[in-house]
Length: 307
Image (cartoon, rainbow, N blue to C red; front, side, top):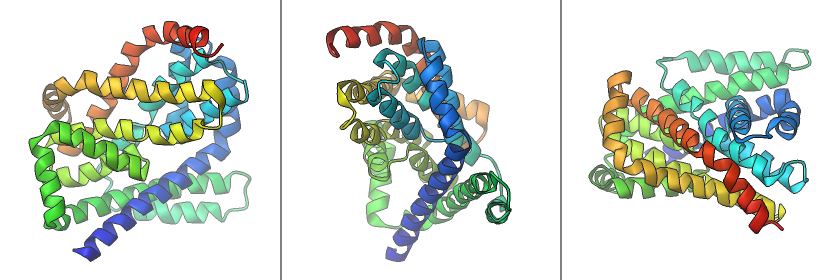
């Protein structure tokens, strides 16, 4: 069992490597343009929502987008009120990772890994960035296959078995598990992928997996908060807003976990895809509900907290 836990940790590290390489590749391709776009275009919450969504789709990391935003705040390139919509959108775009992972890709990750390495060796301007993107996606699928293969052996561990049993019986506990796990590994996407592995074997119920996914959205706020510590009051308030929005969103959706589970399973057909769809629905609905309040909230913070 110790061997399996070690392999499980290695698959998490593989996933983090893949996300880092993929994010790095996309950042080289669109990073500077994305920063300039954030600086120029986020003058209304709705535009900020669209830009934040696009940025996190391209970079596949809501943390990367919020950290860039905090940096722009620290450089006085953005007003605080412009950041609220971007933060709302960042949570939406990163759900694409779960949708990709839910696809039945078989052994395609081997092709992506080899193709990524080959493209990186080509003597073209963007070959390293494009190859990194392919290699990162290959790592994503390889780690997903690993999580699925390890789920059943891992559950034989008394600790993991007890943890999953408590999670299946208590949705509040599941939210706490998701929060702590994503705070440690700093990836809500990795947390969702681990849940998909357990869902594949019927070890974890879909409502509990959704509750863990909700908690993972809170845990990833730690990165933004750490990044904000040296960015002045406006940067810290950006981090506070990220935390506040995610906590309130989880509280709002918590009573609807079972209906969302039933609806997602109805349109998806499998637990893995249903969890990915639930993540999209959760982040999209909560962001759209918050958009009308983003402008007044941003102006209130600027008027009362940042003078």
